[in-house]
Length: 110
Image (cartoon, rainbow, N blue to C red; front, side, top):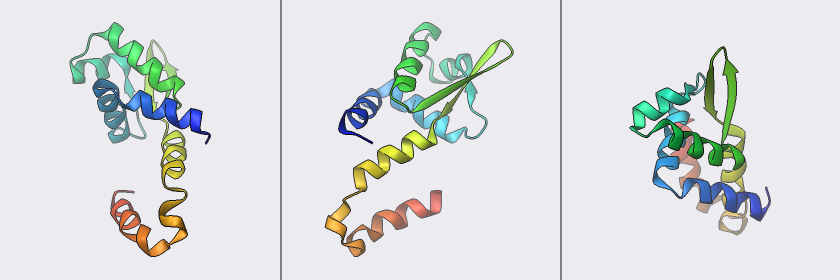
C-alpha cells in the first residue's frame, strides 16, 4: 500500500458514521448487509448512507454486490489487512518482542 492509499482509507474512517458503518460490516462478515439495513441500524437517511458507502468503497474498505433488487455491502477485509500491515510494517524497528503484545491482542479476535 502506498501513502496516498493509506491516507484515503484513514480519511474515510476519520468520520464517525463511516467508522460505525465499517465496524458494523466487519461484525456482519461474511454475509454483509443491504444498504437499507445499514441505514436503519445506524439511524442514518438512506441517501446520506449511500454517500458514506461510496466513500468507503473508493477507499478500498467496502465492497458491494447486487443481489436481486438489493445491493449487499461487505467490509473489504483485504483492504483492512493492507491498511493494518501498512501501519505496522516497520513496527518497533524490526524488534519482534516489542510487537508481540499487539499481535497477541489481535490473535483471539481473528
